[in-house]
Amino acid sequence: MASVSVDEAMRRAIELGARGLGTTSPNPVVGCVLLDADGEVVGEGFHAYAGGPHAEIVALAQAGERARGGTAVVTLEPCDHTGRTGPCSLALIQAGVARVVIAVPDPNPVASGGAATLRAAGVRVDLGVRTNEAEAGNIAWLTSMRRGWPYVIWKYAATLDGRSAAADGTSMWITSEAARIDVHALRGTVDAVVAGVGTVLADDPRLTARNLRDGSLAIRQPLRVVVDSEGRTPADARVRDGAARTWIATVAEVGAGKDGRVDLPALLAELHQRGVRAVLLEGGPRLAGAFLAEGLVDKIVGYVAPRLLGGGPAALIDAGVTTIAEAIDLELIDVTQIGPDLRITALPRKREG
Image (tube, rainbow, N blue to C red; front, side, top):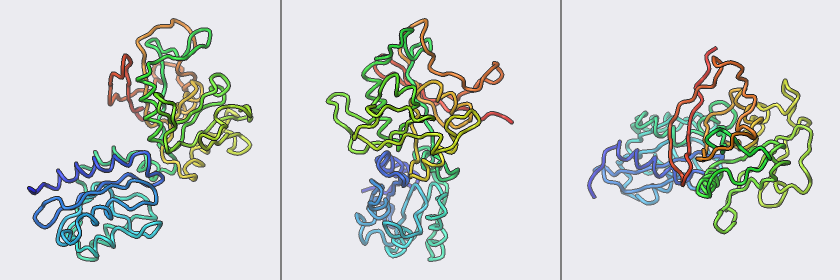
C-alpha cells in the first residue's frame, strides 16, 4: 500500500468519525487513522457508541505491532482519563506511537490533557490539521462542552410563501415524503426533539425517529421534550407512549422566564445535565420565535415546498423583531433539492451589541 500524507489521513479520519454521528452521545464523534513508520495506513477506527472502544483503540487493534514508531492521526485530542474505557493517551504511549496529529483540542476538562501526557512521554504532538472540517463534523458536542448547553437546530417546514398550515389549520402534508424521510434521518442524529404544547395539542405528533416506508422505529430514539408551561399535555398524547423517553417540561419544574413561560436557557442547561448535546427544535412557530429572540438557535434547517397558500399560520412568530434593522440575518451554508422541495441550511449571524 502506498504511503499517504498526514493531511490525507486526517481527511479520512474525519470521514470515519462521521459514522458515529447520532450514536456516541454524550460522547463526541472521533475518527483515527494510524500510519506506520513508512506512512502506510495500518489501522483505522471511529467511536461507534457511548461506552464502546474509542477510535484510537480500534485503530491500534488493527495496527498491532506496526503502530510502533508510527503516527496516529485523530480528529480530537486523545482522552486522558479513565471512564467506561481507559485513557487513549496511555494506550498510544504503550503501543510505541512516535507522533500524534490532532485536529481539535478537547474542551472537556474531565478528559483533556492527552496532548500534554503524550509530550511528557516523548511523543511528538502536532495540532491544527484540518481543524475547521473536524470542528464542523463534531460541532454539536464541541459547542455543548464549551458553553454548557446543547447545540440547537431549528427545523421547520413551510410553503414558498412561509406558511406552516392552511387557513383551516390543516398541515399534513406541507412537504413531500422525500423531505419527511430526510427529517427523520435528521432526528436520528440528535439527542432530543423539542416541541411546544401547542403543537402537541394541534397535531398530536409522535416526535420519534422512524422509517417512513414501513413505520418501524429507529434503534436509538431521541428524548422527546414538550415545553408545556402549565402541564396541559393530555394523558393520551402520542408523545406519552412507550416508543421513546419523554419529558414534559413545566414552569413548576424548570422555572419561569421573563414572560412567565418555561425559562428556555434553564431548560437547555437541564438538558445538558441529562447528557443532551444536540437538540432539534421542531415546533411550533411561537416557541421557535422565543428561542430565536433569546439567541438560542445555532442552525436552521428549513424545508420549503413549491406551494402557495396565501393564508394560514406563519412558520415563525414573535422572534423579537419589530423593525427591519432588527432582522435576524442568516448565513446560507447549503441549499439542496430533496424531492420537489428545497432544504435550506443556514446559520444565524451573531447580533452586535
